[in-house]
Amino acid sequence: MTLFEIDNVRKTFTNGEVKEEILKGINLSLREGEITALVGASGSGKSTLLTIAAGLQPTTEGQVLFEGKNMTNMSAEQVRQVRASKFGFVFQFAHLVPFLTVEEQLMLMLDVSETKLKKHEQTEEVNRILKLVGMDHRKNAYPSSLSGGEKQRVAIARAIIHKPKVLFADEPTASLDSKRSKEVMLLIRDLTKTLNITTLMVTHDEEMLAYADHIVKMSDGLILQNTN
Ligand SMILES: Nc1ncnc2c1ncn2[C@@H]1O[C@H](COP(=O)(O)OP(=O)(O)O)[C@@H](O)[C@H]1O
Ligand SMILES: [Mg+2]
Image 1 (cartoon, helix red, strand yellow):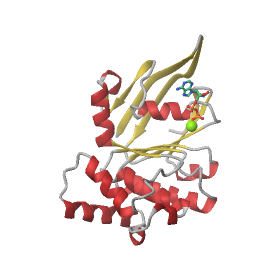
Image 2 (tube, rainbow, N blue to C red):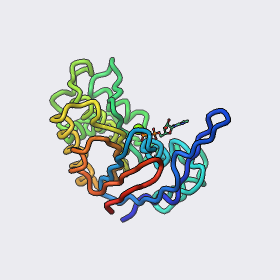
Image 3 (spheres, rainbow, N blue to C red):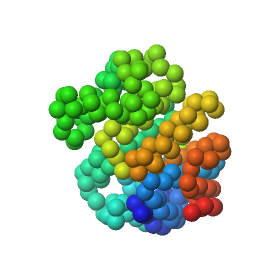
Image 4 (cartoon, rainbow, N blue to C red):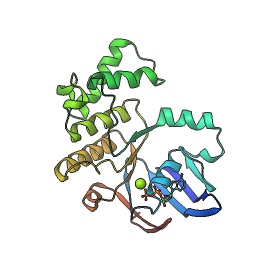
């Protein structure tokens, strides 16, 4: 099933007097339970496209349909609600809170999310997610004692603890060595399949493409090739 429909999306940035078109008419659909990898040279517009799909910035032209609803016409508050309840985010760096343990980072997410769980249910949920990402044995650890790959596993756990339908990952393996990158990709792939998540991932690492279901090559604001 198609979850996202990106329809003739254009994005122009204005720097002083100069207008620059960064996305020049993008059409793309994302299907449930699949990883779509966005690849292309630095500056080709990958992150801009990801943030537009995620409702983090508006389009200049064109529309983004999520679950059949036009996000482009929603109010900022409606978009925020969709983002908070349906989307999860992972970036190049884990951005964990240094003074919270692994378990506390995730408890905090449940506290601020709209899922109304009792304390003991929160603890159970955190343990379940930590098992899923292979980090239950490190639940009392602080970020400073974790490896890059472990931090990224916690960041992934944090991104999916509210059961989002979509995972947006911008260069999730860019700060990891090859072995850890593969482990993190295997995890993202496993979660995408077992939880039926729709994953949109930006990467410039060709090796990571082996884990994608669908590869979209961008160049200079356009889609050059789409393996759909
Ligand atoms: N907020 C912004 N204002 C002006 N220019 C921007 C902004 N965001 C991105 N750009 C420009 O858009 C181009 C594409 O950026 P980006 O989408 O981050 O590319 P990628 O992720 O493929 O490296 C770059 O030239 C960048 O400088
Ligand atoms: Mg980028």
